[in-house]
Length: 251
Ligand SMILES: Nc1ncnc2c1ncn2[C@@H]1O[C@H](COP(=O)(O)OP(=O)(O)OP(=O)(O)O)[C@@H](O)[C@H]1O
Ligand SMILES: [Mg+2]
Image 1 (cartoon, rainbow, N blue to C red):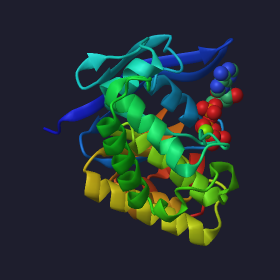
Image 2 (cartoon, rainbow, N blue to C red):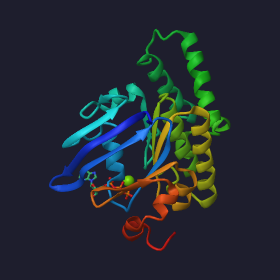
Image 3 (cartoon, rainbow, N blue to C red):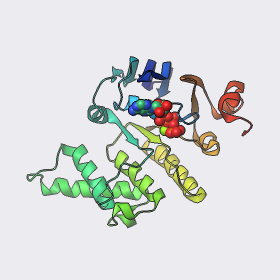
């Protein structure tokens, strides 16, 4: 049986009377590259907010490596080994590319930066930050002001910042949103490469079905406040309920 890194168990969530999820359950196998799809407003980002502690479920459990994390603070969840890149990027535009990653590396390595941070730690943090930037193809832009990067590179930087947290589970909310077709495929290639190289579990939200079916091992469909279906790309693209509710005649 697969080892599950994350299980969503009977989770329900409403906002001021509007129910987004009703008794949703599924589990993610360790090491898997999988996706979440569904119409706008289906609750995909809300699901990430629940998993990462930004929202608390009304009911149910969110179990990460055997521990119920529902109700824990986002920062504590990060420390357990989970990180996230956002639908709208979460970088500091007035800091350089390197500084964005470096501050996260330092925070991850030893708590807060302070006056007594030994120089050797700063050197190793600096090397680690560069290594991460190389991994996402941004090393040659390390000194650039982050806010001046093209949109696709800002999304890459957001992924780099998430990687600086050394996650076991990485959540990517629409990593290709707003990109040109060329940037999209470069980013998809990057996501796939990172997954192969780092051997971490990755879960991404995506609207482009070519991308979803091209790289996911498992696809999960959120619709009608529930998990409508889960399966391989082949199973999902042939699922009549999914075609009727979401895919239409597209595939
Ligand atoms: N903090 C909040 N307060 C009130 N309602 C919210 C909140 N967050 C999300 N919602 C509502 O929950 C529903 C799901 O929103 P969510 O952003 O999770 O959808 P999504 O599937 O990510 O959509 P998209 O594909 O457009 O990104 C929407 O009706 C949204 O308005
Ligand atoms: Mg969303």
